[in-house]
Structures are given as structure tokens and as C-alpha cells.
Length: 108
Image 1 (cartoon, rainbow, N blue to C red):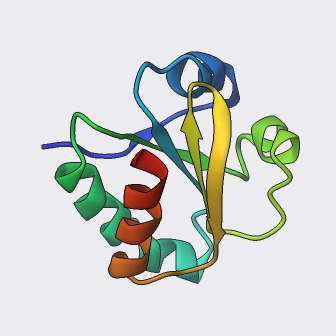
Image 2: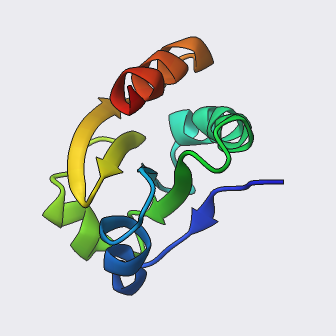
Image 3: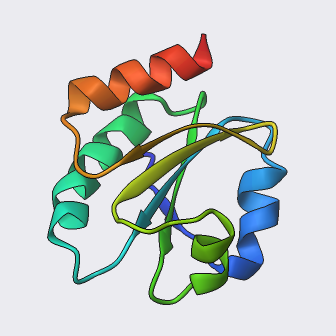
């Protein structure tokens, strides 16, 4: 069962930028209500896209360097990386269908 992996600032380059598969990064914080709403959707997507997309979570309270580097001003922010480059982002809560369309467009 695929589940988003929690990563830190020090793991970001290896887990995201050097990943051989696209990576969806969920920037979140424990106190964020919309983040808690999107988390189960991201977990479902991690299972559905297993093997095609890697899913990771970055707690912005504990990993400020990465959040600052990517200009995270609102959470949740989901950023899709492909070959180490940002290929798209979504800010705020979105329904599952919209997130699937976002991923499918970026992967095609």
C-alpha cells in the first residue's frame, strides 16, 4: 500500500529533485484544517498512481528552508516535480477529481 512519505529539508534533493519518477510534494502543517482535509485524498491518489508518481509530504513548520525555496505562502500547496523541475502546482484544498486531472495532464 503506497502512502505519502514524510521528508525533511535534508532529504528533499534526493527524494524529489533526483527522483526517476515524477513526485507530488504536499506542503502542509499539523495545525492547518484544509491540509487535514486534503491528506486522505493525497493518500488515495498515492495508491492509484503507485509506480507512476511518488508522493511525499513536507511539514512547513519543521522544514522552512524548502518551503521558502519554493515560495510556499499558503498551505496546503501541492507541487509536482518531474526530472527535478516544477511542472505545476495547486494551492488550497481541491476535490479528488481536480487533483487527478492535474496529475493526468502533467503526466501526459
